[in-house]
Amino acid sequence: MRRVFALLLILFFIGQSYALPSGIDSRGDNGCLCHGGSDETTIVELVGLPTEYNSSITYNITLSIDSPVEKNEVQGGFRIILSHGEILGDGWQYMDNGYTHTSQINDRREWSAVWIPPEDGDVLATFIIHGNAVNGDGSPQNDEWNSQSIAVPGPDYTGDSAPPDLTNSLNNPQKIVAVVAIILLLILTYKAIKD
Figure 1: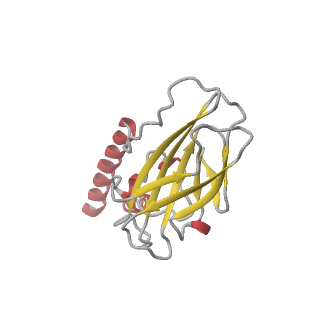
Figure 2: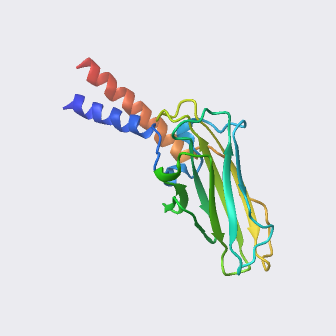
Figure 3: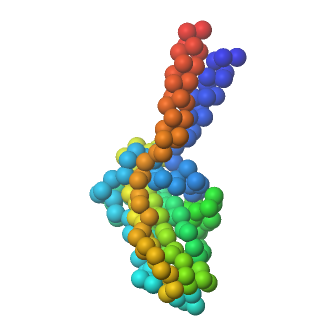
């Protein structure tokens, strides 16, 4: 029974390290951490946003990833956490309080959509964008990712207009859980092999 449990646990953790070609949920809120640290040779850029939004206008936006990572059938993906407004685009989906790609559009590194700003003109719309350039082999090795953050104030917004800080790292509770999980995995693996 211990061997079966250990094997299931190992398979669970291995499964967590593979790519998600149909989009990423809140696990991607701090970046594409399963693919290692962010890489400065990969440039993530969201263009088409105004310096100040007008609630009666929709904005054509384009998200692009420029990276030296080899292009294959599957090329990349993204996760966008948006504080206000809505994004609509072919192949885009809303998942776990953020926008991400589907398997329909992971064959590229440039995506177009429309941003519908909030109706209230007194808010600051913030965008946290994580983009992942992948080599298409289904594993996180040799992929690269990076992030961008943007803040777009409404015409009546008064306050700090700085974009959100990007830490691109695990927070302390996530680090503790990861360390405990790795220790448990090693103990169970040792016991399964010993028996």
